Length: 343
Image (cartoon, rainbow, N blue to C red; front, side, top):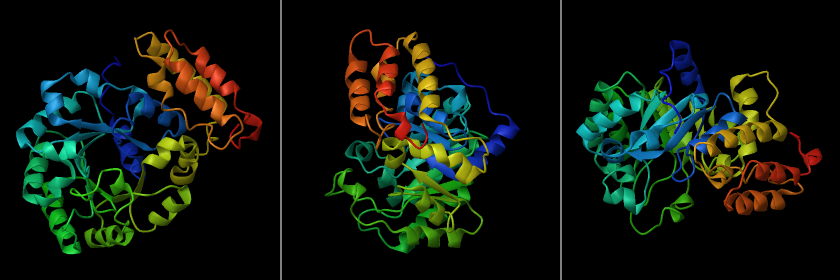
């Protein structure tokens, strides 16, 4: 397992605050440490998030397996799910041992499993409980604590309902809000259907930002291009990309120059091949299977000649017993990199 990372210095914490201008969303089964390592090779500045980790799993489980990460991932935030204040306070203390830059509470996930555990989006109906959770979390750490929420749930869909929720949680001392600009349907829609229904309402998130003044508000939901990010940043403090960043990871190669003023050249496919091959060799020596790494790389060649063969090699060959870094080399060799803008 990766070593426990050192606690960030003051300069690194300042870097984290700037990083919130662009972040990659926490996504269950996707943003594990191998995915985050890939994303960090593409952007040195974007804020990365873990998958949601439940407070119960940390308190009663194997923290190093759930929270271990590579030090190069900074700035990186851990997202927690839970609704028991005492358990969340203990989970926060465990997270602090790993040196995360931010601890985020999930008040946005609509899945049945999350609802049955009484956390995620269903907690928007219980702002006083959320506030109690956040107060004990803040008391347990000096690390910034933030919230990721929806603009509403089910029939609790008025702007007044969102404002009541926000008015309960912001005074607890949290550092920022990440607002998914789509209401969560907890009954009658699957989480997959809820990705498109009901419609996004960015204006509601914009008005919330106006109402909160200097308090940091980041926007999430349905953002697929950097041009769209530019537009959102006219109204809010940061943008968060989810599936677009996962399925089209090369979009991250332009983030540092565009949003953070970096003057270094964007990473190329050659750079990514070298970095991920070295990473895979190290991780294979620790007992990781190659496909656990390559499954996050399938979108790197999207739109290029050879992309289909690239995906086939990295998804099929990487699953075979004894698969090594030569599979990554074979996959990249299938791409016509002369056709790539970032070849």
